[in-house]
Length: 277
Image 1 (tube, rainbow, N blue to C red):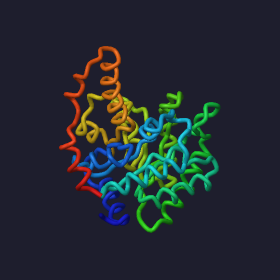
Image 2 (cartoon, rainbow, N blue to C red):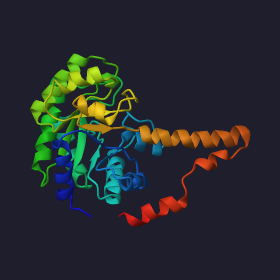
Image 3 (cartoon, helix red, strand yellow):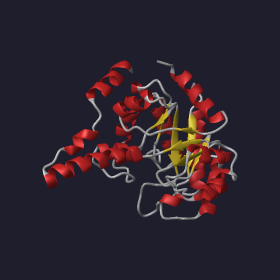
Image 4 (cartoon, rainbow, N blue to C red):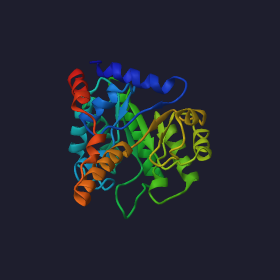
């Protein structure tokens, strides 16, 4: 198993090389092992996937900070790949209190993580600009104090929080870049033209999540548009749940079991789970 420093160095190099890379999102140790076996180069956790697995609603901080950290540790322990994490708003409003989550996250084995400007509250969904920037500064300070190059991703959440203001989103990304964030991320980008507008407005690597993007877009097209990193958020988890519901509905509505033809065999799964940490 590579050391945390080695994983961190590998992860940073992925952001420095030409082209783009896909960073899929497992939600537990098993899915982390499966994605590792398929040959992906890095992984990222998903708050939606974790919330769904616990039977809770994502986006309302219904999953505790400790549950998030435990999930991060389980995924990091399951794979030799670098792992970054969706850390939501870092579980605090005040900048220094929020930044403490970066230190705690690093202790689980993570080599990257995100801070977002969504509050997790319905009454005020997005932090005021000045506070959002101050929070990134504080998170950067903690990230730089770690004994390895932690990759900090700063997220501007306007587009998925009922504020379709691209100009303000770009303004925030530019401020987060100035504050020292390593990767910039605006969930909700849908088309290549808008993606190009964002990537051309900043100089740091940009992450695009395909949960909201046109699914016909390809890795090569996104790379050509200036994207460095491509994630899928909770979409693989929702794909798994779709298959689960399809089978369950066939049993309930028709008393049928033809869905079993589409299952993966234990013979295929067991060697993967046996061969990896």
